[in-house]
Length: 198
Image: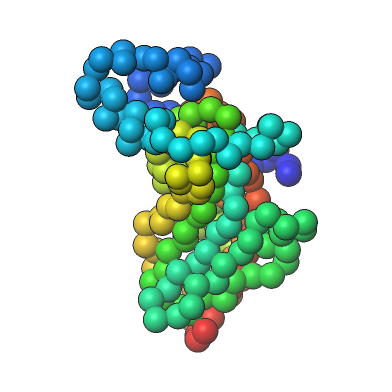
């Protein structure tokens, strides 16, 4: 992926977070074991439940399994990102979106090995090489998935497709999932067409 996307896809930092300052799972579990509020927070992250499903041969901390385009009254368009060539086909097979339609993106992902702090989704949309929008969505912090909760699902804010003859046409987007350590978990290009109808 070319470097020229890096500046456009720079993420804001979570307040109070210091890059590189992180604890192991074991440290989190031992952290102030008698602190009730902290225990509730750890439970909300799922730090004390289920067995690990991490693959020791897979070093990734966050695996984006699928993305879906949700529109009310229509079946979801789901893109499985686990198969070979899945990312490459995203760029070449544009989503078709009806002008003025309301839609949202949904991500399904898995966290493994350690707590993921401040996961964000960034997206830049261009038309004919000119940037038309930049969005950033905070997804939050997540404990590694377990047998009790094998994946996480996050629905992004609803968007409205532009409408009118001028808005119709082909758009290119670059998206990435990045955390507070500035580690990019997934970066990909995709495209969509705004059309008069589905």
